[in-house]
Amino acid sequence: MSYNITSWFIDQLALPATAPRRMFWVGSTNYSDRVLKWPKIERISNKFTTSTINMTLANDDGYLNTFYALTYHTYLPCCIQLGFSHPTSGDEMITLYQGKIDFVSYPNEGQCQIKLRDRLYDFMQAKVGDTEIPVSMGSQSPSEIAWTLCTCYGGLSNVRSTSNPDIDYARFGIWAAQFSADTIRCAGYYKGDKITKALESVAGMTDSCLWVDGNNKIAFARWVTANTLDVVIDRTRQAALIIDVEKGELVNKQYVGFNYAVTSDYWRMNVVSVRSLSITSYGLHENILQDESIWFCDSVSALNLAQRLSARYQYPPKMFKVTTGLWGLYRDIGETVRLVSSFYNITSAGGYRIVEIIYDMEQGKTTFVMDDSAISNAFYLDVSTLDGTDLLL
Image (cartoon, rainbow, N blue to C red):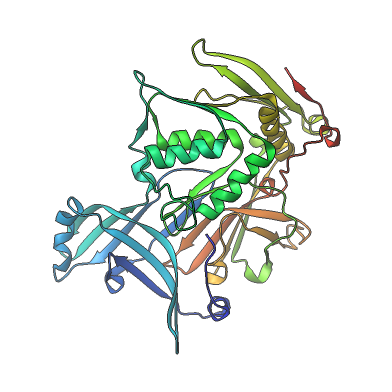
């Protein structure tokens, strides 16, 4: 999701003593003045799970006493926004969260607590097939499997245009085009999997990311090497910087199975991608990827993933967590960053990708989690350009 904001809005975010407006809507009613504490909103691209938001509202007058009854009879859409009031053109707001009321409680006579959930909550309840009547999906693009899971089994809109109210179709189109260009074919078999688990498997078997954006739409992406970087975060923008080197994620010999036989529960073949320079430097780190709910139909598709994963994780990936003020509020998951820190000897020559964002609406801070392995995992069709051996087993 790209925010449609003005240059004036960006200028307000950069001010050292900015005073944003915060809004909480239930349906068409604004309850912002009743909010006692504003929440943290977390958006994660590598963990496909429902996002829960807890709101505590003032209820001294008993006005919110009807919420508990409406929760069980009416779909109550909710919206959390942050922005500014322009002196002449009115409010300009960014929507950080949309969902619905899932739970209401009254801890005392003066407060009403509301729990909000996004659309993935329903996906966590619904299943695809069962043990008696499993669902089988033949050879097709993995994007089509994901589309079927979301629309036919998840009940989302099947409109294939940017007017789709449930799926970020612009992102979906880019994602699907990558599989088409690489000629990736998968098959699926589901016997009671929850939709969230089924979609997580699609993401895992294609090195993809799925998340729910601020407009409560499901977004899809498969990172490729960036030609340019979107933004620079230097010391003047950093309130805090944390570096975490994920040694456990290192992979320099990646196996991927394909042509799974459902009836005999047997993997017919595997491919392997080897990074010899990484093995020399860090020792052997193997990983085997097989999923009995979704698998590749040919060696080209399987080798595509094996090469991507071994390229991405052949060196210990570094995770950077940077906290800023509201300056980066309009940045989005998937954007690329130049990070600069003289203390850690990080120069602007290095690039990182935003994989997680945390909005602290109470403190007026934005935290970005960035992954250096998510920016340089290009797939090379010409295996002679690789530093290792890629084999069909």
